[in-house]
Amino acid sequence: MFAVVVRFHLKPGTMPDFLPLMIRNAQQSRQTEPGCHQFDVLRDAATPAEVFLYELYSDEAAFQLHLETDHFKQFNAATSDMIADKDIRTYDTVTQ
Image 1 (spheres, rainbow, N blue to C red):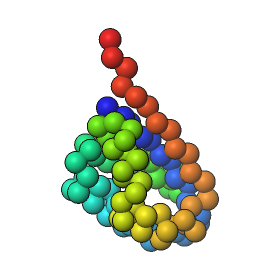
Image 2 (spheres, rainbow, N blue to C red):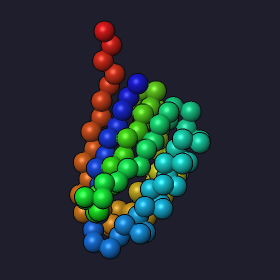
Image 3 (tube, rainbow, N blue to C red):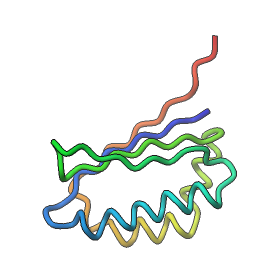
């Protein structure tokens, strides 16, 4: 498996517009991408300007396909001006 975690720090006042777009992107990813196994959108009341994503894909190639989907490109274009900072980290499964 290939995990992706993303932390968005949003510009003031943009959360009401950002969150529905993020949720729709996550739903479309889970419903239409066979390589997407999980796509959680999370928030912490202590940091109201942040959104945290946990995404799980079959492999890195499935994640790269996600980045090429129309729904991701539309989400990215619609939200780019709302984001003050974004941190993306990826992880591969460690097998024993």
